[in-house]
Amino acid sequence: MRPANLRLFLLSCLILVSCTSEKVSPGVGDHWHVTYDFYICDRWVGTVSETDELGNPTNKVLGIYHVHGHDDGLMHWHPSTNAAGGNKATLGLYLSFYEILLDDIQITLPNYLGGTVLEGLTVCETANGQVDGVLTVQLFEPGKTTPIVYTDNLAATLLNRDGLSVTVVFGPAGTSPGLPPSFSTAPND
Image 1 (cartoon, rainbow, N blue to C red):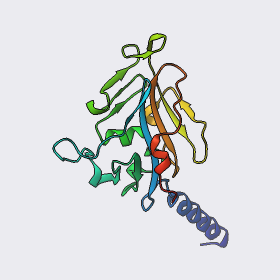
Image 2: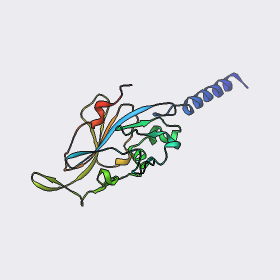
Image 3: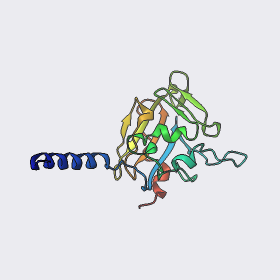
Image 4: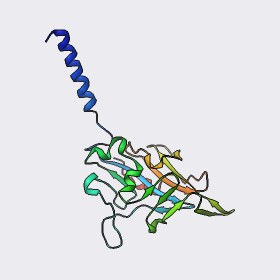
């Protein structure tokens, strides 16, 4: 191989290795925490339970992805595969592990958290009477107290940083309850 071709070949290999070895975040080997809670109309309703009333696990794919909770208001992201990392680390993915449906107009929670709420059908009681609810996801970056508010593509909300906080809100337009209660007990690592 001529020197110019050899240099081109080695440069191509270097580019290929750097592109294919890029680490996704969160990725295999990471252990991240994301605090979260659900806020319906005028109150925090809690987070998903790790076991049902019979003591059976509610996370249907724990052994596959290793993304779960501990009844502590934290999403524990330590994926065992990139199928739960990088741009696949979404709120919708986490909720799907607990058979919770989230789309842009409804969230179907377990009955102990309030069941299904649906824009245009579920109303919230306020001091001024009944008001239609609006579904949003409010994402707090680490160290921030003002959320990024999502009104569409809610399930695709990317959870790509350790220390994020997420509040899923169904309430009158403009409802902003703040950081989830679990934020105050989250680990600092």
